[in-house]
Amino acid sequence: MLGAPLVWDPAMRFVFIRHAHYDKPADKAAREHEPLNLRGQQAARQAGEFLKQHAIVPDLVCTTLARRTQDTAKTVLEALGVERPVLPQKAGFAAGARVGDIEKRLTKWAGLTPALPRTVAFVGHCKQQQACLHALGGPKHIAADRRACVLVYERGPDGRWMAGPYFEGS
Image (cartoon, rainbow, N blue to C red; front, side, top):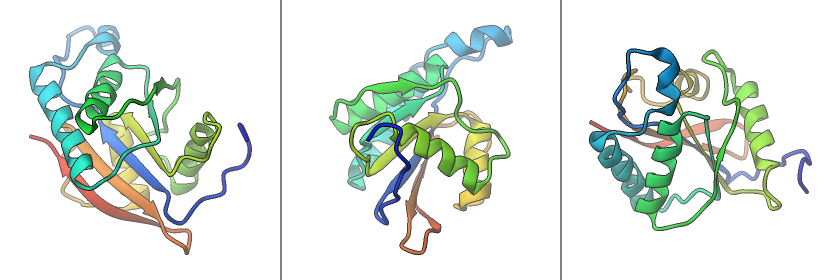
Protein backbone atom coordinates (compact mmCIF):
# COMPACT_ATOMS: atom_id res chain seq x y z
CA MET A 1 0.00 0.00 0.00
CA LEU A 2 3.06 2.26 -0.17
CA GLY A 3 2.25 5.50 -1.93
CA ALA A 4 -1.50 4.80 -1.93
CA PRO A 5 -3.90 7.63 -1.06
CA LEU A 6 -4.37 7.91 2.67
CA VAL A 7 -7.81 7.15 4.01
CA TRP A 8 -8.06 8.95 7.32
CA ASP A 9 -9.24 6.88 10.23
CA PRO A 10 -11.38 9.02 12.59
CA ALA A 11 -9.13 7.89 15.42
CA MET A 12 -5.91 8.92 13.65
CA ARG A 13 -3.62 11.29 15.51
CA PHE A 14 -0.98 13.78 14.47
CA VAL A 15 1.57 14.64 17.12
CA PHE A 16 3.74 17.68 16.50
CA ILE A 17 6.84 17.81 18.69
CA ARG A 18 8.96 20.93 18.73
CA HIS A 19 12.61 20.11 19.27
CA ALA A 20 14.12 20.80 22.66
CA HIS A 21 16.92 23.20 23.71
CA TYR A 22 20.28 23.26 21.99
CA ASP A 23 23.23 25.63 22.12
CA LYS A 24 22.64 28.00 19.23
CA PRO A 25 25.94 28.68 17.43
CA ALA A 26 26.65 32.07 15.89
CA ASP A 27 27.23 30.42 12.51
CA LYS A 28 23.75 29.82 11.09
CA ALA A 29 25.01 27.00 8.82
CA ALA A 30 26.26 25.07 11.87
CA ARG A 31 22.81 25.03 13.54
CA GLU A 32 21.64 22.00 11.60
CA HIS A 33 24.36 19.87 13.21
CA GLU A 34 23.99 20.99 16.83
CA PRO A 35 22.86 18.32 19.30
CA LEU A 36 20.52 18.89 22.21
CA ASN A 37 22.15 20.31 25.31
CA LEU A 38 21.53 18.80 28.78
CA ARG A 39 18.46 20.96 29.32
CA GLY A 40 17.13 19.86 25.93
CA GLN A 41 17.69 16.19 26.71
CA GLN A 42 15.74 16.61 29.94
CA ALA A 43 12.90 18.45 28.18
CA ALA A 44 12.70 15.78 25.45
CA ARG A 45 12.44 13.09 28.16
CA GLN A 46 9.63 15.09 29.78
CA ALA A 47 7.85 15.29 26.41
CA GLY A 48 8.14 11.50 26.13
CA GLU A 49 6.78 11.06 29.66
CA PHE A 50 3.87 13.35 28.79
CA LEU A 51 3.01 11.16 25.79
CA LYS A 52 3.37 8.04 27.95
CA GLN A 53 0.97 9.47 30.57
CA HIS A 54 -1.59 10.03 27.81
CA ALA A 55 -0.98 6.58 26.23
CA ILE A 56 0.06 8.22 22.96
CA VAL A 57 2.67 6.17 21.14
CA PRO A 58 3.58 7.12 17.57
CA ASP A 59 3.59 4.40 14.92
CA LEU A 60 5.61 6.61 12.59
CA VAL A 61 8.17 9.28 13.54
CA CYS A 62 9.50 11.79 11.01
CA THR A 63 11.86 14.70 11.66
CA THR A 64 13.58 17.47 9.78
CA LEU A 65 17.21 16.94 8.81
CA ALA A 66 18.47 18.94 11.82
CA ARG A 67 20.30 16.88 14.42
CA ARG A 68 18.35 18.49 17.28
CA THR A 69 15.04 17.21 15.86
CA GLN A 70 16.45 13.71 15.45
CA ASP A 71 17.92 13.78 18.98
CA THR A 72 14.56 14.95 20.35
CA ALA A 73 12.72 12.13 18.55
CA LYS A 74 15.11 9.47 19.83
CA THR A 75 14.93 10.76 23.40
CA VAL A 76 11.11 10.92 23.30
CA LEU A 77 10.98 7.32 22.06
CA GLU A 78 13.39 6.20 24.79
CA ALA A 79 11.18 7.85 27.43
CA LEU A 80 8.17 6.06 25.92
CA GLY A 81 10.08 2.78 26.09
CA VAL A 82 9.49 1.94 22.42
CA GLU A 83 11.69 1.45 19.41
CA ARG A 84 10.72 3.07 16.14
CA PRO A 85 12.81 4.17 13.21
CA VAL A 86 13.27 7.92 13.03
CA LEU A 87 12.85 9.06 9.44
CA PRO A 88 14.55 12.40 8.65
CA GLN A 89 12.75 14.22 5.83
CA LYS A 90 14.03 16.94 3.50
CA ALA A 91 10.80 18.87 3.95
CA GLY A 92 8.37 19.30 6.80
CA PHE A 93 5.84 21.98 6.06
CA ALA A 94 6.13 25.69 5.51
CA ALA A 95 5.67 28.30 8.20
CA GLY A 96 2.37 29.42 6.71
CA ALA A 97 1.05 25.92 6.02
CA ARG A 98 -2.71 25.47 5.86
CA VAL A 99 -4.72 22.41 6.84
CA GLY A 100 -4.50 20.93 3.33
CA ASP A 101 -0.72 21.42 3.23
CA ILE A 102 -0.28 19.64 6.56
CA GLU A 103 -2.59 16.79 5.49
CA LYS A 104 -0.71 16.41 2.20
CA ARG A 105 2.57 16.03 4.08
CA LEU A 106 1.03 13.57 6.58
CA THR A 107 -0.27 11.54 3.64
CA LYS A 108 3.21 11.45 2.12
CA TRP A 109 4.77 10.33 5.40
CA ALA A 110 2.09 7.70 6.03
CA GLY A 111 2.99 6.28 2.62
CA LEU A 112 6.48 5.48 3.96
CA THR A 113 5.06 2.55 5.94
CA PRO A 114 3.48 -0.68 4.72
CA ALA A 115 0.49 -0.28 7.09
CA LEU A 116 -1.58 2.81 7.74
CA PRO A 117 -0.17 4.41 10.91
CA ARG A 118 -2.67 5.36 13.62
CA THR A 119 -0.39 7.98 15.18
CA VAL A 120 2.07 10.02 13.10
CA ALA A 121 4.62 12.15 14.95
CA PHE A 122 6.72 14.89 13.41
CA VAL A 123 9.57 16.62 15.21
CA GLY A 124 10.11 20.07 13.79
CA HIS A 125 10.80 23.71 14.50
CA CYS A 126 9.08 26.77 15.95
CA LYS A 127 7.70 28.09 12.65
CA GLN A 128 6.14 24.71 11.94
CA GLN A 129 4.71 24.67 15.48
CA GLN A 130 3.14 28.05 14.87
CA ALA A 131 1.72 26.81 11.54
CA CYS A 132 0.06 23.88 13.35
CA LEU A 133 -1.43 26.20 15.95
CA HIS A 134 -2.72 28.56 13.27
CA ALA A 135 -4.08 25.91 10.87
CA LEU A 136 -5.25 23.19 13.26
CA GLY A 137 -5.98 25.17 16.42
CA GLY A 138 -4.71 24.66 19.92
CA PRO A 139 -3.63 26.72 22.87
CA LYS A 140 -2.85 30.31 21.95
CA HIS A 141 -0.30 30.84 24.71
CA ILE A 142 2.34 28.36 23.47
CA ALA A 143 5.62 30.25 23.39
CA ALA A 144 7.47 30.83 20.14
CA ASP A 145 10.87 30.14 21.63
CA ARG A 146 13.33 27.28 22.03
CA ARG A 147 11.31 25.12 24.43
CA ALA A 148 10.24 21.56 23.78
CA CYS A 149 6.56 21.37 22.99
CA VAL A 150 4.06 18.63 22.12
CA LEU A 151 0.78 19.32 20.32
CA VAL A 152 -1.65 16.44 19.86
CA TYR A 153 -4.34 16.54 17.18
CA GLU A 154 -7.05 14.01 16.36
CA ARG A 155 -9.08 13.94 13.19
CA GLY A 156 -12.76 13.67 13.99
CA PRO A 157 -15.45 11.79 12.08
CA ASP A 158 -16.46 15.08 10.49
CA GLY A 159 -12.96 15.46 9.02
CA ARG A 160 -11.92 18.38 11.21
CA TRP A 161 -8.82 18.32 13.38
CA MET A 162 -9.36 18.73 17.10
CA ALA A 163 -6.63 19.88 19.45
CA GLY A 164 -5.98 17.46 22.29
CA PRO A 165 -3.60 17.49 25.22
CA TYR A 166 -0.41 19.49 24.93
CA PHE A 167 2.91 19.85 26.73
CA GLU A 168 5.15 22.87 26.96
CA GLY A 169 8.58 22.38 28.49
CA SER A 170 10.46 24.89 30.55
